[in-house]
Length: 254
Image: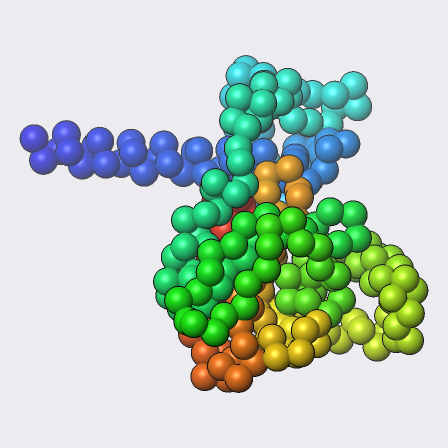
């Protein structure tokens, strides 16, 4: 009986490992829609070429990937079918995360999405304090002086961020250069947290993180609060956001 249980446990571990490796291959292909060779996939996911070849062969049988005319491997038609069947509402998916974040910090928790050159609020869970920061769903916020905007700027390619930043500076008449703003984004990438310290709205400070969904759309979750309370709450807010960042990585793989 003990041997049977041990064998079942070993099979379960092996099965989980295979699924994990197959998911890594699919994510690598997601990042390069033009396709990748077996060698490139092997390098991206850190697996032996022979292992990647076996995984790709199994995925091909299920139409999850296919070999293009060039021989490169691309995501297959079954992926599109699965994606359409698994349509999700980001607000519904993130609402429990916002509730937990608000409960941990006692502060307001916001969800926003990058649309064009601005952030749009999608959802909010108000904090428990009588004095709290509250915005309306659908409100629009800039990128360069908000925690949510800065978080998504730091999460995108440098050339895209530069274009959006300079365009916002031009539209708002801000006399600032890309080289002068770049250290802000470098600090965010280093720390994993973006800040707005009385920069967008007097009396309100905020911290935030960014994440991508499966389609590559950029979102931010932020915690705005009265500046008078920010220093006292800073450690709790930062740790709660970093914990949340780990959860979004688990959910979305980004």
